[in-house]
Length: 243
Ligand code: UDP
Image (cartoon, rainbow, N blue to C red; front, side):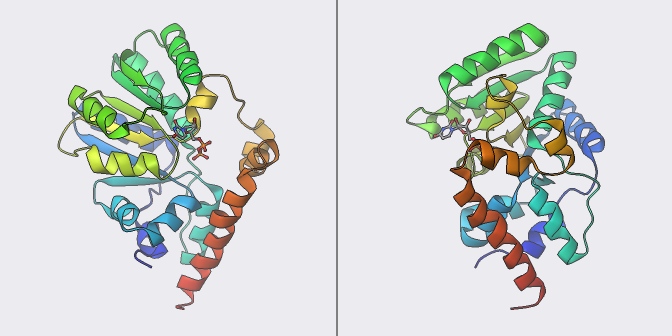
C-alpha cells in the first residue's frame, strides 16, 4: 500500500456546491490552473494501490470533492462530516452556465463520437455564449497527443470524460497549475449532459441511491461496485483501527 485514506480525507473539500463553484470560477477568472478530482471510493482504492494515482490525489494543487456517497459515509469513520455530496455532473452543469455567461472557452475530451456530437449541439443551442475550443471523442488511439494539443490551446475549462483512472492520470501528467485552465475528470457525465442517457430519478438522488439505480440499469457495474465501494469501507475501518 502506498497512500492512506486518512491523507485523502484530510484533503477533501468540506464546503458545499455553491462555495465550490464560486472558488472554481474565481480561479478561472484570475487565470490560475486547477485540477478537480470528483472522488468516489474507486479512485481512493486506486490511490492506495497505484503510485501515480496516489501522487495525483496528494498533489497540493489537486482539489478533491466528495462525489460518491461511499466517500461521504467513509468520512464518518474519521470523524469528518461533509456539508453535502457534490456530484461531478452537477459541477459540469454549473461550469457550463458560468462559461455561457462569461464567454469562456471549453474543450470536451471523451465519450463516443455520437454522444459528443449530441452534447456539442446542445451546447451550441443552449449555451451560445460558450466558445468551444474543440472536442475529441474518447476512442482516439493517441490520447497523449490530444492532451498535449489541448494544453497548448489553454482553454478556460477542460472536461475529460474518459472514465477513472485514465482521465485523472492524463490530467495529472499534462496540466500545469501555473497555466490557466480548469481540468476535471467527469466520467460518464457527457452521456447524461448530451441527453442520451438519463440520470437517476430525483427520488434516488435524494435518498443517496444513485449508485443503486446505475447498477440496476447496467448490471455489469456490480462487480466494479463490489471491488471499490464494499472493499473501500472495509479498508477505511481497517486503517482507522490501525491494522
Ligand atoms: N470512455 C471513453 N474512452 C474509453 C473508455 C471510456 O471515452 O476508452 C468514456 C465512455 O464512453 C463514457 C465514460 O468514458 O462516456 C466513462 O463512463 P462511466 O460511466 O464508466 O464513468 P463513471 O462515471 O462511472 O466514472
